[in-house]
Amino acid sequence: MEPHGLTHGTIFNSNVCSKMLLPAAASPMGHARNCGLYFRKTPSLLCSIRSSSSLPRRPLRYAVLGAGFAGLSVVWHLLQHSPKELHLRIDIYDEVGIGGGASGVSGGLLHPYSPKVKLLWRGADCWKECMKLLHVAETEVCPNESNTEVGKSSQQCDRFIVRRRGIMRPAMSMKNLNVLNDNAQNSLASCRIETMDEDAAQKLVPNLCVPFNSAFYMPDAVNVHPQRYLQALFLSCKNLVKELSASGLGVKELFLHKKSICGLREFEGEYDAVIICLGAKADMLPELSGRLPLRTCRGVIAHLQLPDNLGEDYPELGPSILSDGWLAIQGTRSLYMGSTWDWKSRNSSPIVHEDEASKAFQELLPKASTFYPSIKNWTLTGARAGLRAMPPLTPLGSLPLLGSVNDFVAKNCTTRYWLFGGLGSRGLLYHGWLGKLIAQAVVSCNEQLIPSELTSWKKASL
Image 1: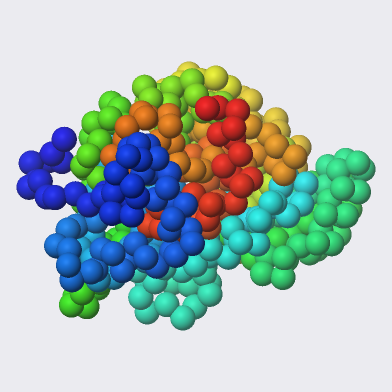
Image 2 (image 1 turned 30 degrees about the vertical axis):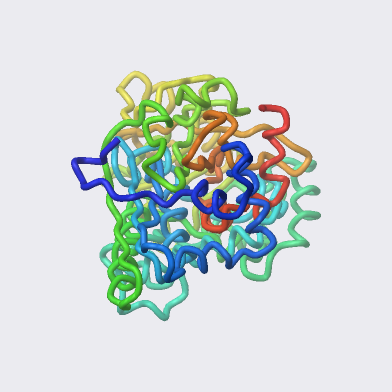
């Protein structure tokens, strides 16, 4: 396969390094596996072999399938962690472009907690790495605000990425209250949870329903504009390519190809590694279909506005609201209300027709009105949808799926295939840390850099 007529180059793949290190009688699949085992002991050896003066300087080539949260995080971290002295080329493949899938239409509410405000598995790591990527993106579009904490400058920059700071979670039952109280005691210092009575909560959100005189406020949580964030992160990747190339070491290249992917074997032999970041569409690839423990779920988000002649504006600095449903505040008279859960849907189109939008609005409005009755004054102006890839529930929660999937593709692969999927409804939170982990595993040819909790799904799938 020649991507878009570009000149074919000599490929230096994992089997080349394995043939240099292993007996000639070893099988091709053994080469790939032993490559990973070998470099686990000496992770810097791959770099030293590639830069050896006795070998020609061949380009290192990676294909990243998908340009959403997962894919762009992987691209950024591949650029960060690949050997600086080597010629590196990364090709991104996505038929709808940057943020055109479920990532780009997500609600954008970002915090490291479960609906019961319990810190998620490795939530501190996920939160930290996500904040780093948000800072990278905000610095790209608002360079004069680069020293400002994420989101603080959003009202001053016309291309702001973080729309709002703060998320409010009112307690809606006595059982709910007790659980929230217990979990809130273990919040992160970097994303703290404050307990408020009704008066304090209603100062931030007038007319908020607080039936048990207790609400839980996350002042450091943020509401991200996903499409703007992804566009800015892609721009950051392109500028990092220029910066690294200008350093005088290996040349770096980054290309975006808007084309659909029919199968993984079309990449065979063209790349050192292919990283699959296609969300729900990963299960539609012939090599992976029916073999991933994923459930698909289409979610519709309703767009609402407050009519000019009705109601009181939402507070300029008022937080978003999270409960059985959620309201992601976009402005004083604009918000998103979400989200529906249409299980087993295979419809990945972001387009929501009038009848589907109306049905979603009728389903979501009663949920939202229980905690914010004033929402009844707002009118539906449109809707958008995304197809989520929901991972299986484990004792640690619903964890994404990571790892090498060579055994799913073929037994004689010369390209190494990796999966980064199943981010579910928390793709924004997970993408930074997990993108870093899988990029490091790809570069070092070492799956054991990924926590076993994220690769254990393969035991039941192979």
